[in-house]
Each structure stands twice: as C-alpha cells, then as structure tokens.
Image (cartoon, rainbow, N blue to C red; front, side):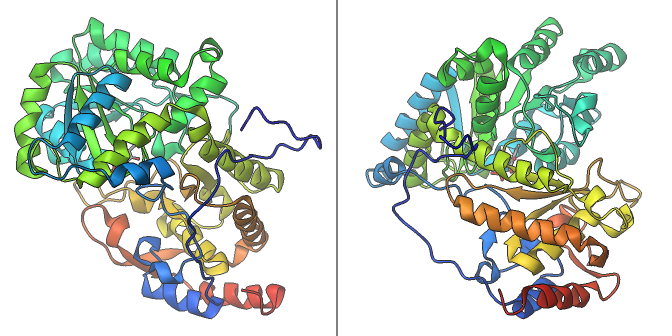
Length: 482
Ligand SMILES: Cc1ncc(COP(=O)(O)O)c(C=O)c1O
C-alpha cells in the first residue's frame, strides 16, 4: 500500500484488499440521536448499535476478518479436550514468537487476571510504560501498585517523536534502586500504548528495558494486544529495522520477553486471547488458573472457530500489507484534522485518531469531563461513536477523590479494514464543524457512578442545556441533512 505512488502526488492510503461482504448502515435523524445519547447517560458505551452510523468505539473484536480466516473457521475441530484447532494455534504461536508454552484465555483481561493473581503480591510494584484500564484494575485488586514510566515525550500532545510509547529506562532503574528488585512483581511493556494515543515503542527501547530486567533478575511481561500497529511503526520509523521483515522484528521482540499476553480481539482480528511463556515454570504457575477461570487448556473459554480464526489472523499479522491499512487510515484522519487546526495527538499512532479534548473544549474544566462531553457531542452531530479516554476512564483513589487523567482524549478507533475513505472524510467533516461550534459544548456530571471501571456503565447528564443548543445550530447549518 505505502509503496504505491499516485501520479497526482496525493498521499492516499490505498487498500490492498477488496470487500466482499457488507453490512448496511443507517444514520438516524439528529432528534433521535439526541434522545439516544440522553438515554445512554451521555456514555457512548451505553448506546445501541441501531442508533449508530460509524462505530469507532473500539477495534476490539470488530476488525474485519479475511476470507482465509472465515474459511478456517469451517474446519474447526470441536472437542472439550485435545482439539486439533488448539494444536494448530499452539504451533503457530511457537513459530511466530518462539515461545514453547501457550495458555488460551477468552480475552485480554482474562490474561491480566491470571498474570496478576500469580505474580502480583500485596505491596509489590509493577513498573510499565503506561497502564491500560483493565490492567491497572487487576494489579490494584491484587494489592500491587502501578508505576508509570512513559518518557516525557509520551505525554506531550504534539511532538515529532516517532516512539512516544517508549519507557523511561532511567526511571525504571531508579525504582529498582529505591525499592529493590524483590519488591517488583514484573516489568510490563505495552506495545502500541493504548491510553496515550496508540503510540509505539521502538525495538531499541524494548532492548534496553529487557537488559535492565535481565541484570536485575526481573521478568519482562509484554502486552502484545496492539502489536500489529507497533510492528508497522517499527518497520517504517526505526532506521535499524527498515530492512527487516515483520516476522524478524516480531521474533526480535519476543526474544526479549519472558511472558507475552494479548487480546486476540485486537491482535489477529479474532475474539479471544492468550498467554505465551518461555519457561515451564511460568506455564505451570498459571495453568491451574486457566482451568479455573477460563476453561480447559485446549480452549480457554474460546470457541474453536475463533481459535482457527486466530491462528490464521496471527499469521496474516506477519504480512505488512495486511496490517498497514489501519495506521495509514488513522494517519489520513489525523493529518486532515491537524491541517484544519483541530487539536489531535501527533504523530498519528495506531488504534485510532485521538482528539485532544482538553484543548478542543478548553472552556470546560476537568471536573466537567471534557473528553466525555466531546464524545457525546460528536455522536450527536454525526452518529459517530467514539470512546472517552480521559478522567471518566480513571477511577477514584482510596479516599474517594477524583484522579484526573494526564490526557483528556476522545479516541476514534479505526477497526481494521472496516471503513472506507469516504466514511473517514465524513468523520473529519463533522469534527471540523464541531470544532468551529465548540463553544456550544457544555460539561457533564455523574448521575450514576459505579465504583469500578465506571466508564463502562456510569451515567452522566449535561451541566447545562447544551445538547439542545448544539442540535439547533446543526439544523440551522445542515438543514434537513442527516
Ligand atoms: C493494551 C491492551 N491490553 C489489554 C486489553 C484488554 O483486552 P480485552 O478487551 O480483550 O479484555 C486491551 C483492550 O483494549 C488493550 O488495549
């Protein structure tokens, strides 16, 4: 795709696949959208699909599968124990990651549950480049403390640093010197760092982290959920890797790690997850919990059809042309928004386009959840469902105080190979209109606030009657257009 030049000189992300199955979409009128977002308590998680035009909530479990994946699902070997489908997956994992031991789980957070239960003890620390919501919740639940050592660049909204997901290795060494290696459960690196805008780490940085782990006898646990995008960025942004194949880069990454876990809802465009380990000792420690929480060792809560799809999906991840559509579509959206002056995270990362909600609605204080308000407003004006990745996605501290997010982001995920470029242009168009009318967007306050992972079920209402004002302006500008 990136190798095709247009005569016009335009930089157009050209798909190297064709679409053979489609799903019809509706864009419901704005009055219905107003009703729907209020029924959902301004929480885009609580919207119903029938009210959504472009679902950019997540890429989790909603990436488009390939014909080869669908074909493989038809030959799945269904049995409680000893399924051939599982053996095929196990072999593929060993081929790609070079890790001998594999445990299946039903999705990424199930892997986090098991890893945290086995390795996190009360009072221990888990240093990482950056947390993910469910990761942190599991570590904290087991009495651990998350220490985030993202480099300073990582938390800058705009930067030309190609690897904003890198870990600050001096800070990691500092923690080891301060508390001692025995207090550290493991070191975690998240590839394609989700909550700071899908930003990648470099292979060189991972090598440094791994060196520190080895020197101090610490385990390196690698969350590979967003590996596909990160591989694309390593290949295209890291000079030392330009001539390496995706397969070679993957193997170099895995050779640096002790445990690799992933959500196959993201990695491999299927639905499931897994934990790969290098040693029998780690495998044995986690094995019983898989049978307790997930299912028998040859399915781990997944359907065998998904296992087949995962095997093919992982193999296809090793093909540059199968993984570069997402990052290039995202780059297109980010560049168009940036050109129009809309505050977006740059450089473009993987996973989705990330709007800097703090700057977009700078008139709203963090106490009024700017990212949540922007997510509700964008749904209202475009039927586009994004995800709040700001303070609503955080949880209160032990004393019940708010812990405000470092970054108030609206994430517009790009499920891989699902949307067309004209749909992305529609998204850009509606966001630019919203930016020009941003003063109309007001804040939110909780009316129902769950204690844990509140962003999933929490309900909020507008602090003022701003929704109606935004609808009125939309109608004035767009007439009877949907
Ligand atoms: C980096 C990362 N780790 C873990 C998970 C959890 O995976 P799952 O949603 O399959 O439970 C996610 C999901 O978005 C993720 O992005």
